[in-house]
Image 1 (cartoon, rainbow, N blue to C red):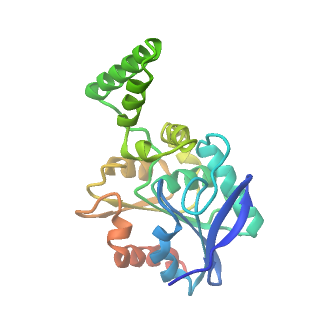
Image 2 (cartoon, helix red, strand yellow):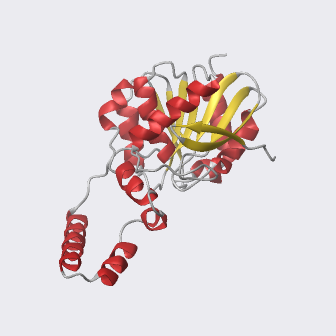
Image 3 (cartoon, rainbow, N blue to C red):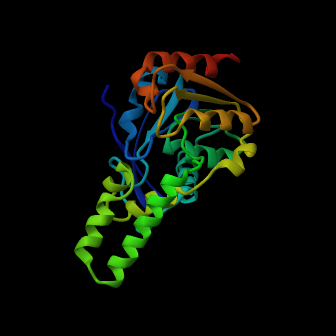
Length: 255
Protein backbone atom coordinates (compact mmCIF):
# COMPACT_ATOMS: atom_id res chain seq x y z
CA UNK A 1 0.00 0.00 0.00
CA UNK A 2 1.25 3.49 -0.85
CA UNK A 3 1.31 6.07 1.93
CA UNK A 4 1.56 9.84 1.61
CA UNK A 5 4.91 11.13 2.84
CA UNK A 6 4.62 13.86 5.46
CA UNK A 7 7.30 16.29 6.55
CA UNK A 8 8.52 17.69 9.84
CA UNK A 9 11.67 19.56 10.87
CA UNK A 10 13.29 17.84 13.84
CA UNK A 11 16.57 19.03 15.35
CA UNK A 12 17.05 21.20 12.28
CA UNK A 13 16.68 18.32 9.80
CA UNK A 14 13.83 17.99 7.30
CA UNK A 15 12.29 14.64 8.23
CA UNK A 16 10.14 12.35 6.10
CA UNK A 17 7.58 10.12 7.77
CA UNK A 18 4.32 8.30 7.15
CA UNK A 19 1.48 7.51 9.53
CA UNK A 20 -1.79 5.64 9.48
CA UNK A 21 -4.38 4.18 11.82
CA UNK A 22 -5.90 5.05 15.17
CA UNK A 23 -5.29 3.83 18.68
CA UNK A 24 -2.17 3.53 20.80
CA UNK A 25 0.96 5.09 19.30
CA UNK A 26 3.37 2.65 17.65
CA UNK A 27 6.65 4.00 16.23
CA UNK A 28 8.75 2.04 13.70
CA UNK A 29 12.52 2.64 13.62
CA UNK A 30 14.50 1.23 10.69
CA UNK A 31 18.11 0.05 10.55
CA UNK A 32 21.25 1.74 9.28
CA UNK A 33 21.30 2.40 5.55
CA UNK A 34 17.61 1.55 5.31
CA UNK A 35 14.39 3.58 5.21
CA UNK A 36 10.79 3.65 6.39
CA UNK A 37 9.69 1.38 3.53
CA UNK A 38 11.61 -1.48 5.14
CA UNK A 39 9.08 -1.35 7.97
CA UNK A 40 6.04 -1.26 5.66
CA UNK A 41 4.90 -4.85 6.31
CA UNK A 42 4.67 -4.08 10.02
CA UNK A 43 2.78 -0.83 9.37
CA UNK A 44 0.31 -2.61 7.07
CA UNK A 45 -0.33 -5.26 9.70
CA UNK A 46 -0.93 -2.95 12.67
CA UNK A 47 -2.56 0.18 11.19
CA UNK A 48 -6.06 -1.19 11.83
CA UNK A 49 -5.42 -1.34 15.60
CA UNK A 50 -2.71 1.25 16.31
CA UNK A 51 -1.70 4.75 15.25
CA UNK A 52 1.49 3.78 13.45
CA UNK A 53 4.35 6.14 12.59
CA UNK A 54 7.30 5.19 10.39
CA UNK A 55 10.10 7.69 9.81
CA UNK A 56 13.30 8.10 7.85
CA UNK A 57 16.20 8.83 10.19
CA UNK A 58 18.35 11.85 9.19
CA UNK A 59 20.80 10.80 6.50
CA UNK A 60 18.50 7.99 5.37
CA UNK A 61 15.64 7.63 2.91
CA UNK A 62 13.98 10.91 2.01
CA UNK A 63 15.04 12.79 5.13
CA UNK A 64 17.69 15.48 5.00
CA UNK A 65 21.27 15.23 6.21
CA UNK A 66 22.54 16.87 9.38
CA UNK A 67 25.29 19.51 9.22
CA UNK A 68 27.67 17.68 11.57
CA UNK A 69 28.33 14.09 12.56
CA UNK A 70 25.82 12.63 15.00
CA UNK A 71 26.13 9.81 17.48
CA UNK A 72 23.35 7.72 18.99
CA UNK A 73 22.65 10.38 21.62
CA UNK A 74 21.95 12.99 18.92
CA UNK A 75 19.64 10.54 17.15
CA UNK A 76 17.88 10.00 20.48
CA UNK A 77 17.36 13.77 20.83
CA UNK A 78 15.99 13.76 17.28
CA UNK A 79 13.50 11.06 18.27
CA UNK A 80 12.53 13.08 21.34
CA UNK A 81 11.77 16.06 19.11
CA UNK A 82 9.78 13.92 16.67
CA UNK A 83 7.67 12.41 19.46
CA UNK A 84 7.08 15.74 21.17
CA UNK A 85 6.05 17.58 18.01
CA UNK A 86 3.54 14.90 17.01
CA UNK A 87 2.13 14.54 20.51
CA UNK A 88 2.92 10.83 20.70
CA UNK A 89 1.99 9.36 24.07
CA UNK A 90 3.40 6.23 25.77
CA UNK A 91 5.04 5.04 22.55
CA UNK A 92 5.48 1.43 21.58
CA UNK A 93 8.71 0.98 19.60
CA UNK A 94 9.37 -1.66 16.96
CA UNK A 95 12.96 -1.29 15.83
CA UNK A 96 15.57 -3.05 13.75
CA UNK A 97 19.36 -2.99 14.15
CA UNK A 98 20.54 0.66 14.39
CA UNK A 99 17.00 1.75 15.23
CA UNK A 100 17.28 -0.42 18.34
CA UNK A 101 20.24 1.61 19.56
CA UNK A 102 18.11 4.74 19.46
CA UNK A 103 15.10 3.03 21.02
CA UNK A 104 17.20 1.64 23.89
CA UNK A 105 18.78 5.01 24.62
CA UNK A 106 15.34 6.66 24.55
CA UNK A 107 13.63 4.07 26.76
CA UNK A 108 16.46 4.19 29.31
CA UNK A 109 15.65 7.86 29.89
CA UNK A 110 11.91 8.01 29.17
CA UNK A 111 10.07 5.51 31.31
CA UNK A 112 6.74 6.29 29.66
CA UNK A 113 7.66 3.92 26.82
CA UNK A 114 4.98 1.22 27.00
CA UNK A 115 6.71 -1.67 25.22
CA UNK A 116 9.52 -2.35 22.76
CA UNK A 117 10.20 -5.02 20.18
CA UNK A 118 13.85 -5.04 19.13
CA UNK A 119 14.96 -7.27 16.26
CA UNK A 120 18.59 -7.86 15.36
CA UNK A 121 19.42 -5.17 17.89
CA UNK A 122 22.77 -3.46 17.51
CA UNK A 123 24.30 -1.66 20.46
CA UNK A 124 26.69 -4.02 22.25
CA UNK A 125 30.29 -3.67 21.17
CA UNK A 126 31.69 -7.09 20.21
CA UNK A 127 34.81 -8.54 21.78
CA UNK A 128 37.51 -8.64 19.12
CA UNK A 129 40.19 -11.28 18.82
CA UNK A 130 43.89 -10.97 18.05
CA UNK A 131 43.39 -11.08 14.24
CA UNK A 132 41.11 -8.05 14.37
CA UNK A 133 43.56 -6.12 16.55
CA UNK A 134 46.43 -6.89 14.16
CA UNK A 135 44.42 -5.75 11.12
CA UNK A 136 43.36 -2.56 12.91
CA UNK A 137 46.93 -1.76 13.94
CA UNK A 138 48.17 -2.38 10.39
CA UNK A 139 45.48 -0.08 8.97
CA UNK A 140 46.31 2.71 11.41
CA UNK A 141 50.04 2.38 10.68
CA UNK A 142 49.44 2.45 6.92
CA UNK A 143 47.15 5.46 7.23
CA UNK A 144 49.76 7.35 9.31
CA UNK A 145 52.56 6.53 6.84
CA UNK A 146 50.57 7.65 3.78
CA UNK A 147 49.61 10.89 5.53
CA UNK A 148 53.16 11.84 6.53
CA UNK A 149 54.50 10.94 3.06
CA UNK A 150 51.77 12.94 1.35
CA UNK A 151 50.50 10.05 -0.79
CA UNK A 152 46.90 11.28 -0.98
CA UNK A 153 45.80 8.87 -3.72
CA UNK A 154 46.99 5.76 -1.89
CA UNK A 155 45.47 7.11 1.32
CA UNK A 156 42.13 7.57 -0.41
CA UNK A 157 42.26 4.02 -1.78
CA UNK A 158 43.16 2.63 1.65
CA UNK A 159 40.24 4.41 3.29
CA UNK A 160 37.80 3.42 0.53
CA UNK A 161 38.67 -0.25 0.92
CA UNK A 162 38.69 -0.27 4.72
CA UNK A 163 35.86 -0.94 7.11
CA UNK A 164 32.50 -2.58 6.71
CA UNK A 165 30.20 -2.35 3.71
CA UNK A 166 28.03 0.12 5.63
CA UNK A 167 31.08 2.31 6.23
CA UNK A 168 32.14 2.19 2.59
CA UNK A 169 28.61 3.03 1.44
CA UNK A 170 28.34 6.03 3.77
CA UNK A 171 29.01 9.35 2.07
CA UNK A 172 29.97 12.77 3.36
CA UNK A 173 29.00 13.48 6.96
CA UNK A 174 27.40 10.04 7.25
CA UNK A 175 30.81 8.36 7.35
CA UNK A 176 31.99 9.96 10.63
CA UNK A 177 28.41 9.57 11.86
CA UNK A 178 28.62 5.83 11.23
CA UNK A 179 31.89 5.64 13.17
CA UNK A 180 30.32 7.43 16.16
CA UNK A 181 27.23 5.22 16.01
CA UNK A 182 29.03 1.86 15.92
CA UNK A 183 31.33 2.89 18.76
CA UNK A 184 28.38 3.59 21.06
CA UNK A 185 27.81 0.79 23.58
CA UNK A 186 24.37 0.66 25.20
CA UNK A 187 25.35 -2.04 27.71
CA UNK A 188 25.54 0.33 30.72
CA UNK A 189 21.96 1.59 30.21
CA UNK A 190 20.24 -1.75 29.58
CA UNK A 191 19.38 -1.98 33.29
CA UNK A 192 17.46 1.32 32.94
CA UNK A 193 15.08 0.01 30.26
CA UNK A 194 12.10 -0.72 32.49
CA UNK A 195 9.37 -1.44 29.93
CA UNK A 196 8.59 -4.97 28.68
CA UNK A 197 10.91 -5.85 25.79
CA UNK A 198 10.56 -8.55 23.14
CA UNK A 199 13.86 -9.44 21.49
CA UNK A 200 13.59 -11.19 18.11
CA UNK A 201 16.80 -12.66 16.71
CA UNK A 202 17.90 -14.64 13.72
CA UNK A 203 19.85 -17.72 14.81
CA UNK A 204 22.66 -16.97 12.37
CA UNK A 205 22.78 -13.19 12.64
CA UNK A 206 26.36 -12.14 11.89
CA UNK A 207 25.80 -8.36 12.08
CA UNK A 208 24.50 -8.61 15.67
CA UNK A 209 25.28 -12.14 16.86
CA UNK A 210 22.72 -14.02 18.93
CA UNK A 211 24.94 -13.80 22.00
CA UNK A 212 24.18 -10.07 22.04
CA UNK A 213 20.48 -10.88 22.25
CA UNK A 214 21.11 -13.20 25.18
CA UNK A 215 23.09 -10.45 26.91
CA UNK A 216 20.27 -7.95 26.41
CA UNK A 217 17.73 -10.44 27.74
CA UNK A 218 19.88 -10.95 30.84
CA UNK A 219 20.56 -7.28 31.57
CA UNK A 220 17.14 -5.78 30.83
CA UNK A 221 14.74 -6.11 33.79
CA UNK A 222 11.75 -7.33 31.75
CA UNK A 223 12.92 -8.90 28.48
CA UNK A 224 12.27 -12.12 26.60
CA UNK A 225 14.10 -13.56 23.60
CA UNK A 226 12.53 -15.28 20.56
CA UNK A 227 14.95 -16.96 18.14
CA UNK A 228 14.05 -17.51 14.47
CA UNK A 229 15.91 -20.70 13.59
CA UNK A 230 18.01 -20.70 10.46
CA UNK A 231 17.55 -16.97 9.82
CA UNK A 232 19.89 -13.99 9.91
CA UNK A 233 19.96 -10.24 10.67
CA UNK A 234 16.86 -9.71 8.51
CA UNK A 235 14.62 -12.30 10.16
CA UNK A 236 11.75 -9.81 10.55
CA UNK A 237 11.83 -9.13 6.79
CA UNK A 238 12.31 -12.73 5.65
CA UNK A 239 9.50 -14.06 7.87
CA UNK A 240 7.02 -11.16 8.13
CA UNK A 241 3.98 -13.29 8.95
CA UNK A 242 5.77 -15.08 11.76
CA UNK A 243 7.28 -11.85 13.06
CA UNK A 244 3.94 -10.05 13.08
CA UNK A 245 2.26 -13.04 14.77
CA UNK A 246 4.86 -13.03 17.56
CA UNK A 247 4.46 -9.28 17.86
CA UNK A 248 0.68 -9.67 18.05
CA UNK A 249 1.02 -11.95 21.07
CA UNK A 250 3.48 -9.57 22.74
CA UNK A 251 1.37 -6.45 22.20
CA UNK A 252 -2.10 -7.90 22.68
CA UNK A 253 -1.37 -10.35 25.48
CA UNK A 254 -2.56 -8.05 28.25
CA UNK A 255 -5.81 -7.09 26.48
